Image (cartoon, rainbow, N blue to C red; front, side, top):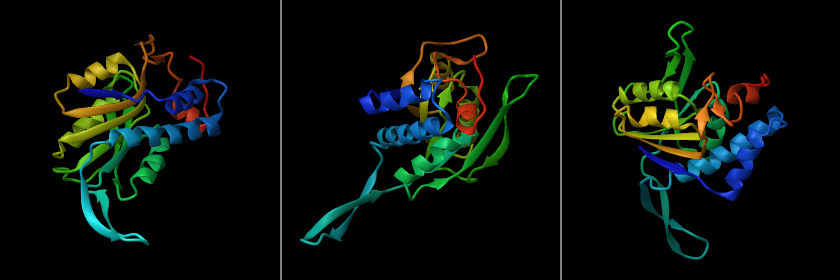
Length: 210
C-alpha cells in the first residue's frame, strides 16, 4: 500500500492544534476541516481530468474538469468532520456513509449503517476517517466498498499508527493512504500515542483523558 505523508508547515500547524489538549471543540473542528482540505488536495493529485474549451474575457483557452468525480465515504461518526471539507474541494463528488461500531464481546467492528451505491465498479472512492489505530474499522469499510466492485480506493486520515497501516496493507485490497503523520505506537487501550485523543469525542463535545 502506498502511504503518502503530507509534510508541510501548514499541515503540521493544524495537526498541532488537533493534538493540543487545550483546543476546545470549535478549534479542533476548524483545524480538522482545514487539514482535510490539504490532505484531499494531495490525495487527488493524480486523478484523471477531461479537457474542454472555455473562453476567458481575453481569448479562448483550455479548461479542465475531473473525468470521474469520486464518491466520498466518511466513516461515522468521526469522519463527519471531514465530509464538508472534502466536498468543498470536490463539489461534483457524491457521498456515501458507513457507520461502524465495535462489538463488545468479539471486539470486531460491525456496520450499524451502510449507505453506499450498489455498484462501485469503475468508480473512485475516497474514504475519510481521521484516525487509523488498529485499522480494523477502516478495513471493514474498505471490504464493503471492494465487495461492490471498487478497485480505486484512496484513504484520507489525519493520523495513523503502524499497526493499522500494516493491517490495511496486508488485506489484499488495493488502496492508497494520504495522512499528515504516522505516530510510533498504540497504548494498551489501542489509542494512538501520542495521538490526539478520541477524534469523535473532541469534535462533538465529550472529553476524556487517556
